[in-house]
Length: 265
Image 1 (cartoon, rainbow, N blue to C red):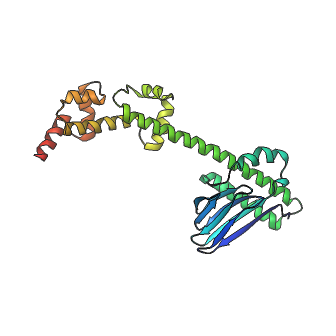
Image 2 (cartoon, one colour):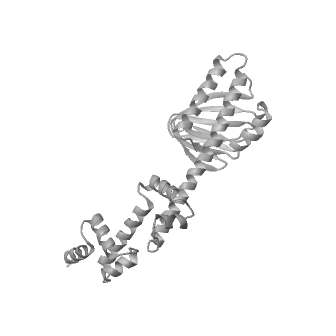
Image 3 (cartoon, helix red, strand yellow):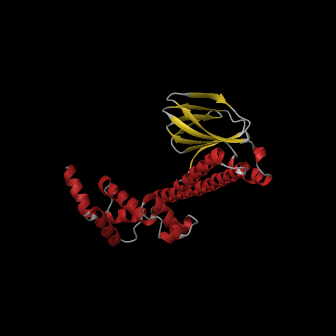
């Protein structure tokens, strides 16, 4: 097996420390079990089971085990890779050093590739180095694609929070689901899908909750008429306000106000 690509297990006892150092090679570290912390160029990261460390050459790094910890280390020199793999895959996968957490599917695939590489290293035949290079290329593909999926998820989280913040600030002027989606520059279906995935309710259901919550607050804390409160929180008709208020709170607005006023007295 060439020294230019190798995979080995690194075991750490509790409170073990690996001092700051760097390599001229590329490294991928996969935490099999245990937990601890690592520093990548002075930035601290928590690591535990299934944490993945992507370490580019000349990155100063150190590890401290907070419990017994086993880590698989894959180390390789870029010279073993073909030009296209080096230029297209390696450059993107190792754009910067980082700690990653893959989703369940990608993590399972990654572990399988590590197992295959360990097998080839120990039991493979004359083509084992070529096979390991192929598996390495597959790993790089997983790193690249999973990062793009993470970016999509991150974008959706930002969009959902944008919808939520808009509802909380402009609850009084939103006319319909279509109106809200247009204001967010999204399709109605997409806005509902990403919002419901995060909050288990549609944007319009959340809008109703916000309006009713504000209505309750105004009923108890102001002397405004119910029709004025209805208008102020964004309901188009008094009958709609009464109907939705009663369905969510259990009593109509006038009874709610009277009951709580009497309790305070």
